[in-house]
Length: 80
View 1 (tube, one colour):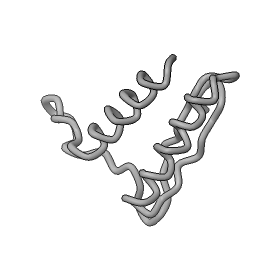
View 2 (view 1 turned 90 degrees about the vertical axis):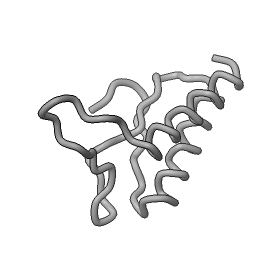
View 3 (view 1 turned 30 degrees about the horizontal axis):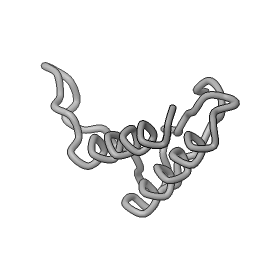
C-alpha cells in the first residue's frame, strides 16, 4: 500500500466516522464509538504492516481520541 492509498483510507475512515451511515430497516440508528471515554472497538492492521499503515493507524487513533475523548487500542494482526 503506497502512502497515497493510506491517506485515502484514513480520510475515508474519518469521513465515515464524521457523517455516520444510514441505518438499514429495523437497525439501530446510531453506533456509539466511545461512551464515557471507553470503547469496545479497536483499530486493526495486518501484522508486519508497512510503516505507512502503522502510521495511518496511529493517526486515526489520535483523531478519534481528539473528537471523542476515548483512545481506541491498535491491534496488529487479527481483530480480538
